Length: 615
Image 1: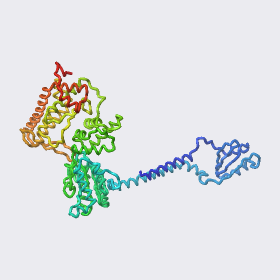
Image 2 (image 1 turned 90 degrees about the vertical axis):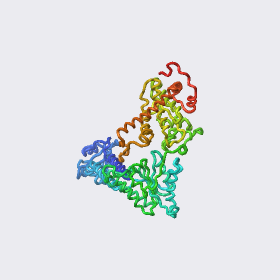
Image 3 (image 1 turned 180 degrees about the vertical axis):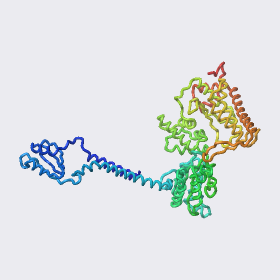
Image 4 (image 1 turned 60 degrees about the vertical axis):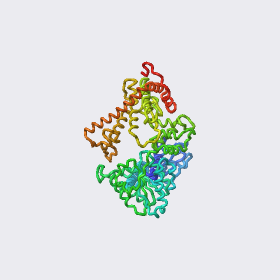
């Protein structure tokens, strides 16, 4: 219901309420007098004034009381008084005042009208609402084919390129697109043509949508924004119609930019869905392809599209002439993360002691959305602690919250379990410390976070894009450190190593089947992962090797895992006093990090006493 219709509805309800108030009998009204009782009161001298209004009589007594009475049809009040020998000239006779009758309300029809007026008003209200619903349905039906794109103009405030950091190459590519629209002569005099489409590719949270909003803020042209899912409805042909309407709007406002977020919702590979060529999604995609080919040579319209699944897009969508450019937004490096943090701390009260470079080093693999969430969590923690500014401690705690979740302070554990977890985490840390290719250990904690009873956090010394077999081997050994420490100190195994073992198994199998790191099997891959495109996820792996090779693959995987296990066991057995020292301090202190942790590693471990380390 529109705002106008809602106002009309409120007015009708108010009128109905007012009429009910006017015509409903008052709770304090008296029973009307019959005409004989009126004559008796007149003869007794009790009546002071009588108002005759049509057939209605209003009698006012000497005491000031008012009574009502009604004459019969075709009855004259004065004639009735004469027949009853009432002398109106005598002393004490009432003053009779005649008032012209009220028409319909003064007759018997007034009773009928009062009784049926609520029904009439209710019926009118019902007809009004039904007509509005029919009109709204017709308007909605006509609006199915209309595009739901939001149009942004130059005078509407939004983000700009200064609000985007860590993706300098992508900004340069899109800055050029903006210049294509602003200064077309700069390119046309050299014979360059405007690219029709730019596909933004990157992981979730990488800044694709933010960068598109920055293009809208930088361009002095209309900017149409829509999500891929908004094209598709349950009615066949609606998506294609909306595509046509969107491009018609863009052509009328040329030069313009169209941004389609999550284009994989309609741009997936054709022929893989249910329904074949009659699939509504495929018809929508066909219309997008047609519109992109149908641009006139002098039409300055550029399409921006964003997706984190370029592998499932239809090849016809990616060919030159449609999406001419592919802009990749990868995870930011350490300098990019520092710039992103500087963008997100704007408007926040930050302590001068906060080291953004140190935070950037600790957030390897964080996306732009993760870093934004990190800064917000730090601000919330500072406010919760009643601080006037955000300090380094809040950022450190926020990193742990983003990675592992908030502390579970309410979780109570026995001294025995706490001891097992302490030795488990100390095992991880000590193995990593003694391996040349493992990342340095930054923090150890036995405070529960999320689903973890404790955790060991390592910090890479630099951004890494390639991983060697030696690094994988040291990672596997570090993962087995907790499990081995439990076995050495307690001669027992617990379920705490379940996630470590699962990760180690995946890495070892990938080393053999994907990365060709097995000396026995050589540099080849094994197995072909297949995906159902319309489901968008891996559901099976096709074997392209024999059963004999399958056994050899298992043997090689077990070989990598066993080698890592042996390395971890040798390190912890040879450094058992240090393991006990770290674990015992961890039980008392719960968290050890930074410089204190380095000093603990470098200190001399006390000699073990008999039965030391037992819990």
